[in-house]
Image 1 (tube, rainbow, N blue to C red):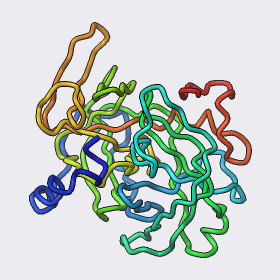
Image 2: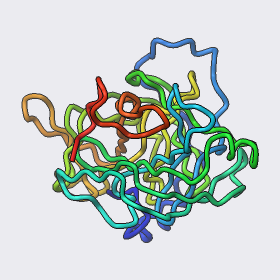
Image 3: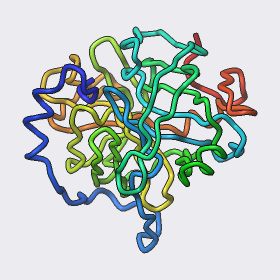
Length: 281
């Protein structure tokens, strides 16, 4: 997972100056109205100690629900979950720097638990905060980002918003990967970016926002650095027939619509809900 800042400082420093100001790449046409584009800024994104993330809500979340922060499973303060490991309701007092629209820090938020985390089938962590959406809105004027409850669309224009680096990458959804394998971990139906989303260490956990809907469709998590095959920091694509493809320099994200059916009343993670396909402990 090259997108965690820990262990990637040399790569980050080398790329930080070389990767400024890329223009959106052109992918396959998406079935959306290109004339409608939502403004995307840093409001609601967060910086972790080693990664990026965002304050998120489900389409049905209520103002008085405890707010949630989304990042990667490999960004947990306790280290990478093992293959097959699923974490639920683990106490945590982790803090997050929440950003305003311009990228300035407006608040420090605190978790009371890791509600869910895994690196099996997907790469996500969901923290429950000590404040509600309404409290955050009243205190700081910041609204949570909404997860889209639909599968992302190939060719869609997207932005990857890194709270850690206060940087926004623009590109398109190039396609979807049946299985993305990296060392001991395998992820299902991953999003592949077009090349201009050349994300770097510290962008792990960044929300991937569809510029037509303004909603989160994925969470940034990895990319192939060196052209190696299926090793750490060098994920490989595996199709339905077991054929392996290596795309050096291409980066990936994990879809987030699968989270929505697993969040119940009061923003509680409930893996027994109908339609919930997240891995269970």
